[in-house]
Structures are given as C-alpha cells and as structure tokens.
Image (tube, rainbow, N blue to C red):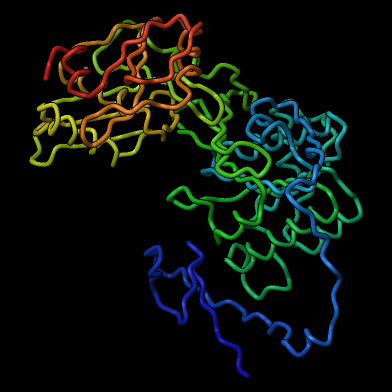
Length: 454
C-alpha cells in the first residue's frame, strides 16, 4: 500500500494534505515542506500474537516523596523552576535573539558545576572557543563546565551515554540534526525528532536537559508546538533591548507554579539577580506627574509594583493613534469604550499612549483600574498622590471587581512606603499592611471621587 505524503508548515506546525505556497494556519509564505512518511504501526493481528508486560497500577492515595531538586545558586532561576532543577526533567527556554539566553544558561551551568553537579554545555551555534570567550567576560573561566560544539544528535547522545552528566544544556534545539530524519536542520521533523530523543534519553538516564529554543517574530517558540508538550517546563526570557531588565517567565511547569517570574538586570558582567524588583521598577519615579500611576500586581506567587505611564494629546489625524507597550492593546480599547459609555468621558480626537515602565509585560485584568486612572490623570492633567497604588478589574458595565491576593498586594505596597490604596469594594483586605484603603463600587464613582469629573 502506498504511503500517504504529509506536508507540514515549518512556522506553526500545521499539517496539510498537499503542498501550497501559503499556510492556511499562520498565513506565512513558502513554509510548507514535505515530511518523510511514518512507517506503518503494528497490525491488530500482530498485536494479538504478542504479549507485553503488565502495567503497574496505583491509586490516588499512594504516597510518594517529592522529587529531589538541585539548586543552581541563581535564586531567580531556582524560583522560576519551582525551587530548583528536578533530575530527569526537560526544560525549554525561549526568547528573542540577543536577549541573553546563552548568557543566563552559561551562568547557570557554572553554578550547577560549582555545586558539585556534572554539567555539559553543547553549542550548535558557536565554537567552543567562542563559549570560552563569553565565560571569560562573565568571570566563569574557572568553572568546571564541559564544553562541546556539535549538531549531530547521534554523536551527542553517544557522548552523554559515556559521560553520564547531571545537567545538559543544548543551545539550540533548532540546530540539532538527526541522521534518521530526511530533512534539513531546523525543520519541523528535525526539531520534533531531536526534542523527542533528548527528552526520552534524559528521563531514561535520570539527567536534566535544558533546551534553548528560537522564537518566531510573533514571540512563539519556532517549530512544532508539540515540543512544548514533550518537555516538563517552558520558560520565556522576555525584555526590551533598550531596557536593562530581563524577565524569565514560566508558562508551563509540571514541578512548580506557572506564571512565576525571575527578574534579572543586564550588566557588563552578565545577568545580575534582582531580589526586589518592585523597588527597581519604581526607582526612576520623581515627583507626582500626570499620567503616572503605580499598580500593585501579582506575577506567579510574587507581588510586583510597576508604574503605568499614559499620555493623552490632541491628534492631527482623522484616526487617532492608540499605542501600547507592555499591556494588551485590545484591553486598552475596552477601557476607553467603558470610560466613554459609562462615564461620559470621550477620547475622540485624542492620541493615547500607554507604557509599562521597566520593560515588563502585565497581563492580569487587575490592572484595568490602574490603566483607567493613568488615562484620566493624563487627560485631566491631574496627578495622583505619590504614595497611592491602584488595582482592580473593570467590567463592561462599569462595575469594579475585586482582585485576588489583595492582602499580599497591600503588604508589598506598604513595604515600599505606600500609604494609600484605591481598590474595588468587597475586597478581602487584611490587617498589618499599614495602607489606608479607599474602596470604590463602580468606575463612575471612582472618576467623581478621585478626579472630580464624570
């Protein structure tokens, strides 16, 4: 029986029955490639003639010890991993080119090696001499890390079988090449095969493997999305090149909380940990200015205070600009619509610019009220008091909804000297934060009480 041909998009991983110039899934051109057909699986007749081993079944009451963890010594990395690196686990790290992925992992490899673990750093993009030069710049030239520059997956697995390391870093998975797959390195088939081989090998041999993944222009890890399902942890290294701050965010973690973040600062000597990111993000604030509002947010399990900056100016264009950095542009449009429909405050004919200071990206809905406050402050040219934090979710009816972990948000604000908080009514406010709470039931009441408008 003839084998059916398969065509896959190298950008998004979508499968097609025939080749075409444009992918229907992502809209990219010239990304569809033919994949080698898979061999036929076992037939029902052959399965009936074979006997496998019986599965070992357990129930939900079975007690097992938590997995042991190896701490890297880089506290922000250990926090994102859930307390350290778990043996026989697979971690995928993605990020924009030049953001600092290789620097971070070389520092982590040196920390693991200094802690007594056997670490191997395999680079498919650089020669060993280039990795040594980076290590010298970072002051890690004496770290007992083993280096290799290779892309052949068979040779890498043979070396790992002989060396038996505790930690392996593959930089990057898109450069790996398997001679059992008939396609070019970086293709969907090669990336999927290499990720599968490395992940299964790591779990079978009890070692931890960290894979570096390239990202597309949309910020997603290049290649098939199935590799994110194969690994145990997916981390994204975020940041703007114009800012010195870098955010390591866990979007998937089978051994810890997701959405946890670690904050680093890019310096001449590499990536430095930021133990108190709230103080660092607010370090540039001067006297109260219109359009500046401090938001108390939650990233994973960590409360973080960041500054929202808004600018509202008359527009010479027929279609005013709506520019957003660090927040969802669709949610900004919703806030503007609610302000106009429920509070009678129009933004027609006005350019609106919104920025999150420090290069961090905020995604939780609790930032709605802080954004609305920043927009109103910029439009009315009225600054909020310096020691005020704002948080809360806005519904389409204009009502304010309480945010989760209110007590932790207030405690973090109190630690940094904030004395007043504006938040939705019926929030679960604890004691001991030292912050005076001002509760609001709806957006129109907030506008009238704080800005005297509406």
